[in-house]
Amino acid sequence: MTVELPSAQQVREARERIAGHVHRTAVLGCRSLDAIAGATLRLKCENLQKTGSFKARGATHAVARISPAVRCVVTHSSGNHGAALAFAARAHGLEAYVVVPRGAPASKRAAIEAYGGRIVECEPTMAARERGAMEIVERTGGRLVHPYDDPDVVRGQGTVALEAWEQTGGFDAIVVPVGGGGLLAGCAGLVRALGGPRVRVVAAEPAGADDAYRSWQAGRRVSVESPRTVADGLRATIGEHGLLALRTAVDEVVRVDDAQILEAMTLLAERAKLVVEPSGAVALAAALAGAVRGRDALVVLSGGNRDLRTAGG
Amino acid sequence: MTVELPSAQQVREARERIAGHVHRTAVLGCRSLDAIAGATLRLKCENLQKTGSFKARGATHAVARISPAVRCVVTHSSGNHGAALAFAARAHGLEAYVVVPRGAPASKRAAIEAYGGRIVECEPTMAARERGAMEIVERTGGRLVHPYDDPDVVRGQGTVALEAWEQTGGFDAIVVPVGGGGLLAGCAGLVRALGGPRVRVVAAEPAGADDAYRSWQAGRRVSVESPRTVADGLRATIGEHGLLALRTAVDEVVRVDDAQILEAMTLLAERAKLVVEPSGAVALAAALAGAVRGRDALVVLSGGNRDLRTAGG
View 1: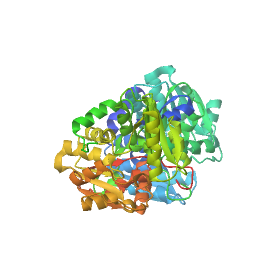
View 2: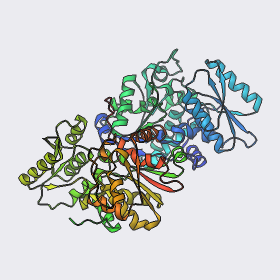
View 3: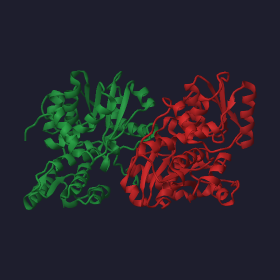
View 4: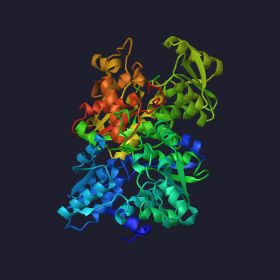
C-alpha cells in the first residue's frame, strides 16, 4: 500500500464516481454557536448522509473501484463502516460480509442487515476480527475494504471537504474528528491542495482515546492501551494515512473530554436542531473550546447514528 | 380585515421582503420514512429556520410592512410567534412587547428576551392576554401583530410552500400542521395558485385539539373547550384565514394522536437526524399514517423548539 495524502484531482475523480449514490449534504450555520466559538462555523452535515455517516462516501468509492471480477467485499467493523459497506455493495450489486464481535449492539447489527449485509460473528478481540475477515476473503475471493487505511476509502472521505469547499466558497479553518484517520487524511489532503498553508487544519479527538494527539506530538505512532470515551466511533488507533496527515498537514490536535462532547451534542440539538452521535459532536466541541477563534471554519459533523430508544442513547 | 387566501403574486412579494432576514431552509428526503408512508416525502425543514420555526417568516413580513411612523410591535404569545416577532422587530430596529401569561416556561421567556423582546406578564387567561396587548398598543401606538389572523402574517407563512415548490420542482401533495391556521392558509393559497386542484392539500391536526377537523366537517368554526395534546403549538382555535382555507382549499383534515406524534418525532431523530418539537412532527405523523400514499408529498416540519434539558423535553 502506497501511503500518500490524496490530491485535489484524485478527490474530484472520487466525487465523480460516488455522485448519485451519496448525498451532497447541507452546510448549515448557527449564530448562537458562532457566539460561543468566537468564529463563523459552517456545519457540514454528514449526519444527514446516506447510512447516517460520512463512511458511505469512502465505502462507495472503494466498491466503485473494485474489479468487475470481484463479487463481494469484506470488512470487520461493528460501527458505521460496516453499514456503509453493506449499503455501497448493494448499490453495486455485490455481496458484503461484515465480521462483527459477539455482544455488539443490536442496533448496529440491524443497520448492517437493513442494507443486506451478511453478518459473521467472531470473538470480541481484534485478532479474531482480522482472522475472521481474512478467512472470508480466502473463501470468497472478495476484497477486504479497510475502514480507514485504504487509499480509495481515504479519497472518498476527502469528498466531504471538496464538496464543502465548493458550497461555501472556501474557508480558512477546518475541524475534523480523528479516530483511525481516514476522514482526516482525505480532508487534510484536499484542503492543503486547494487552500495551501493559510487554512488551519485541526484534528479533534476524545481525550480518553488520544493516540492521535500523542502520535502528533511524538512524530510516530503511539497507541493507547484501553481507550475510554463516549465517542465510540473514534476509539480506533490511528492508521498510516492518518499518521501521514498528522505529520505533514495538521496544525493542531485538540483534545476534548466526554463532558464537552455531550454538551456539544446537546447544543447541536437545541440550537441547530440536529441529531449527531457522540463522535459526530467532537469537532464542534473542539470549536466551542476556542480551537478556531476568529476564523471562518468548516466543522465536520461526521455522523448521527445514536440509539434514541434505549437508556444508553 | 379582508379575509382571503394569498395569491402567488402576494406570496412572491412577501418572499422579496423577507429575503436576507430568514433562511431558505433545506428540503430533505429519507428513504426509510418513505417506506413507512408509502410515498415520496420531502421534508421542509422549518425547524432549521431562524428562531427555530416558520413563525419567523410571517413575523418578519408583517414587520417589514409596517408604516415607518410606527416604532413598536405588540403580541400575546408564549410560543414561537412571540420569539419570532421579537427577532423580526430587532432586525428592523423596532421594539417588541410580548404579553406572556404568568407560569409560562422559562425557556419560552428566555427565547423572547434573547431577541430583545420586552415581556409583560399577565394572568393566564385569553381575556387577560388580549387586554394586556391592547393596553400596550394604546399606550405606545404600536401595531398588534396577531400570530395567525393577519394577512401579512399569512402571506409570509405562504413562502414556506413557494420556496419548497421551487426547490423541488413541484409536488402533488402537501401536509401542513394546523393550529390557528396561518401556515395552512398561506400554503394552501399558494399551492392552489401554482398547482391547481391536482395537488392534494392535507391539514394535520392533533386529535386532542381537533377544532379544525370539526370546523372542516361542519363548514363553520367549531371550537374545542379544553384542548389536550403534547403538540403545544397547535392548541389555538382556528382563525378566519384558516377557516377559509378549510372551506375552499383543503382536501382533508387528518387527526393524529399523541402516540403517533411522539413516534414521528422519534423517527425523525433516528432516521432523518432532525430535532423537531411535537407540533413540528404532526404533519409527518399524518403522512406516516397513510395520508399521502402514492404521492410526491411536501411535509412541513414547522418547528424545532423543544426543551432538551428538562424531563418534560
